[in-house]
Image (tube, rainbow, N blue to C red; front, side, top):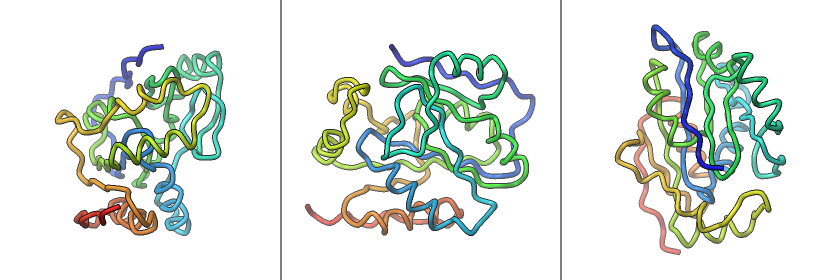
Length: 204
């Protein structure tokens, strides 16, 4: 299945006043590891929300996704229950419509998304922060191989996708090498709106 075009419902005004934090990065960058650590760090703050993505593949211990089949995905889409959806790696992904309600309530919503939805979401929400998580190619390959799922398709195709795209410039870049706790701290700072600078990664 090729990557589906992004569809975001038409809106007359950008959604606010809350913040939408979009976490992007190639397979193996460690997005879910940092998101899980950030979620724990923010557990006591009810104004920060980490919605579960809907994905049409088997659930994984590495990700906090809600598994749905294609029929359920189509039904939710027809019912207007999805805020945004996209396709990647032969699967379909979406964020629930509740994301909009949280942002309208002034909350900060943190979501793992494809870079293909960044521009439409920037146009639809008043306050969007993009955090790009990356790692060297050899690290990406090693991580993807370790967690390989049969439904993911060829590793080479997953590794060919990159967030190094001038059309989607991030606000914060995290090179996820070494201690993940330190990188999770930078993610938490980005979620809180604290300006951060990426430290030089230590040689491997």
